[in-house]
Length: 116
Image 1 (cartoon, one colour):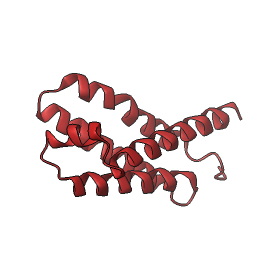
Image 2: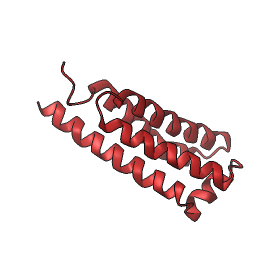
Image 3: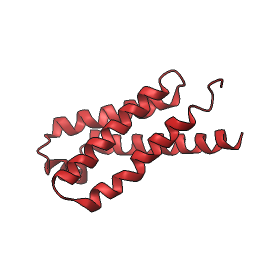
């Protein structure tokens, strides 16, 4: 029971962060455009990435789409992590690593409302 409560809190945190960062990308916040411009992403590409991030965050909430949402969000985080390493920004990549691990931990513990 305690694991389900902990996982529920982790899920809520991941969803909050996904919606927050996705909204920052969708609304083309200057810091997001600045970060993605290092990798030659257009404003449209950043907006699309933000929309996908927000959709993935919402998919995590429902048990039937939980796995897809986590995979999509983890893939987005992994993409940013790899792009950070591509420009030799180890600090930026290190910042992304806990969020990638968060999605993997959530997948491991599964959705709290599924019947096990």
